[in-house]
Image 1 (tube, helix red, strand yellow):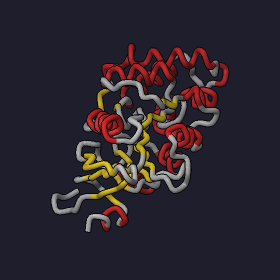
Image 2 (image 1 turned 30 degrees about the horizontal axis):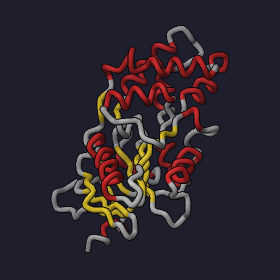
Image 3 (image 1 turned 135 degrees about the vertical axis):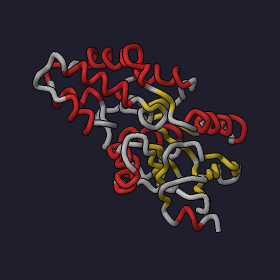
Image 4 (image 1 turned 90 degrees about the horizontal axis):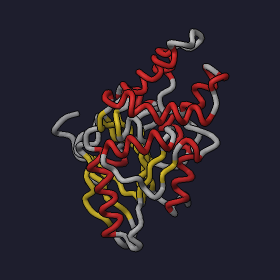
Length: 254
């Protein structure tokens, strides 16, 4: 990233945010959970799980590695305890809280109906994601898609497509952006017809770009909503600093 690069600009009707790795850097906390989980299960390789399962539902990972433990109620409890046991390893992704609250403010004050035009779509369970939001001081959104609300987790697009439809932007012509850090989530967002902002909190820029991200950034500090068009119901979002941006988002600034 250089100071000479021109800003990237995109226009969207709604924004969908992943949680872990996008709003909160929970990698350290989740990693410690898997290491603790593996201590009493010799057939489980925590380091391999840490390396390969980011962005996937915990239930799906446990079902693969330790099927006898794949009891929904138990997995939900384990996940809900992660912030309490390992939360000191987690911290907000820089700029994430500010951007979410900016989308919320514009939604309430500028849109025709005053309803939220943003949502959270996470592979985490409701107890886990709720505690992360509390740590971030972000109020739980009206559209909050957690692991319990889908039958197919990322990379399947079900979660993001459900959020689009819930917000009223399920039609193909509607412009939606997905903020993600994991290849599984990027694939899910792409297949749901969204443009993708990839955050390099977990993976390097090349991996995030190759996964299909349209704009690749270190974090969310350089994002700001410049305006909201009441006629088209579109947010104009400007990105001042990035590793990569598809040329179509640079041409719009000419």
